[in-house]
Image 1: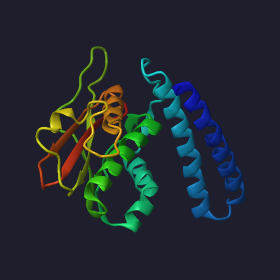
Image 2: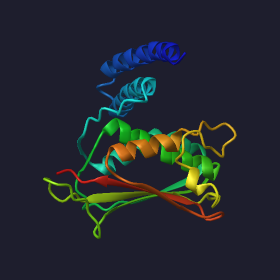
Image 3: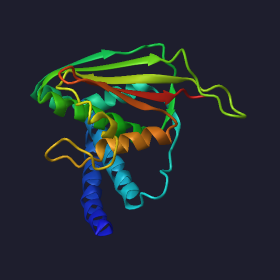
Length: 223
């Protein structure tokens, strides 16, 4: 069934990608349209990659680790959610540390990670509230592995001022198929947890009822 569904999904994705590529060729003179078509092509590729990964969950993901500017990646994710922000009363506050070095990561997977976290925040706020994204360098801790240099890492905080998470739900939110939403699959945060573990980082959550939630993600600095 999964293979059949994947096949049926991949066919229209190929058509969408082809149409976006044709549009991209016609849009060279219009920077805004060129930017959006680039995003369309990249997102289709990311969805296609996700489908392939879901077909064989038993194998570890093959990471394409490169040096990334975390702020450019976060801004690209926010651009994907620009329409959602404009259609609702949501304020986005960014507190980026401009001195942060590049991080080591897989662009497609980290895009999926932060897109999941931001979408969850929007859903929690139910169309009205403040999304706060902050980045900072970790100065107190580092990772040391035999035969390698000391590994430093950064933190990315994604917070909202929604209703928060109940204390009894906090231990389970990263478990597959656990959800508090009526139409949720319970896979979003489980995928986030897997992506961060595969990157050698951490993901934590701080929340209390009525005071919103803040997800904290650590990522290794590129060597």
